Length: 186
Image (cartoon, rainbow, N blue to C red):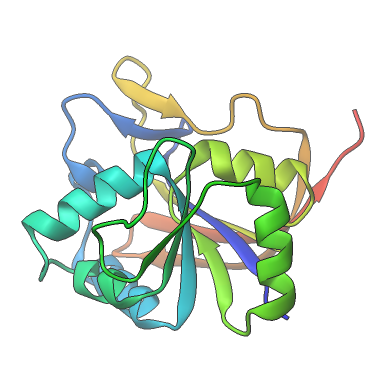
């Protein structure tokens, strides 16, 4: 039986990206990049939706040797989408067109490796709402992107209580926070 972790990078004000800012808001440092490469090498199954698949597979095609991308390409990936068609071009990618929650519940029962989302805000929201997420991890970047921020991560999410499991600082500025989530009754 495996565990499912939702994994995000966010600005301090809760955005996934910002217009005009580089990737990682230009704040990735060597310690964080080394950690990402190690995380990508860890044997797990990456779960994502169609938008994240298009973005990440594009990055992998353009810069296959960039930090973490070669390792991510080698990982098994499950893509949930009703708009993509099989076969998927990115190596080691499986397409599931049915209900993601049902599929993930079955994957948790039969898979021995950990399951982790990559981005995929809608997929992560539906998995959290269904109560199948075991861990919730964010890396907070010390920027506020109130005017340029795109993709507010937590809009539309249920109310969730988070119990801190671990924390870590990268490059004296980025904060990793890992929690056990509990969905609260409205």
